[in-house]
Image (cartoon, rainbow, N blue to C red; front, side, top):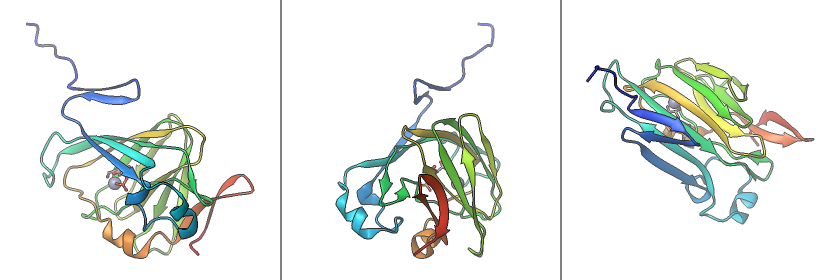
Length: 187
Ligand code: S6P
Ligand code: ZN
């Protein structure tokens, strides 16, 4: 043995493999509280897949100093005029930052400050790298016609606060307006 080892994790062919990988699927039926147009939402099949996440957790959740890594795949689609998107969250430990690296597709990273007074977005395209400050809520939307996929790396003690978003939402939503992805005030 020469002491050289392969990586324990590998991303290729649109899939994370190698080390232990946890897979999560979010379907229309799981996302009732995030989309604004409830009539358009009710017309979609509850089992339609909106996004999938593959994550590798090398240490236990809550461990200080470790990192988690994941790949998110958002399918193309809209609920009314609002693009398919992730639930979105703050980190439970608010000062924990995160990095996203876009792999494939077209999308937007939607960000909101802690008192919900400001929402802004960054364009995601293959190769774009996004540093998400701690204290900032983040969600991603697929604005293209194919799958949007991106890698994420975040601290193992960050945790997720979904509750605040499910109760109050983001103060702006991303909709298609005259063919262009546009942030508008939440109706
Ligand atoms: C975790 C990181 C991503 C998201 C994933 C799904 O901190 O931000 O892996 O978990 O994009 O989004 P959500 O909002 O449903 O967790
Ligand atoms: Zn996060």
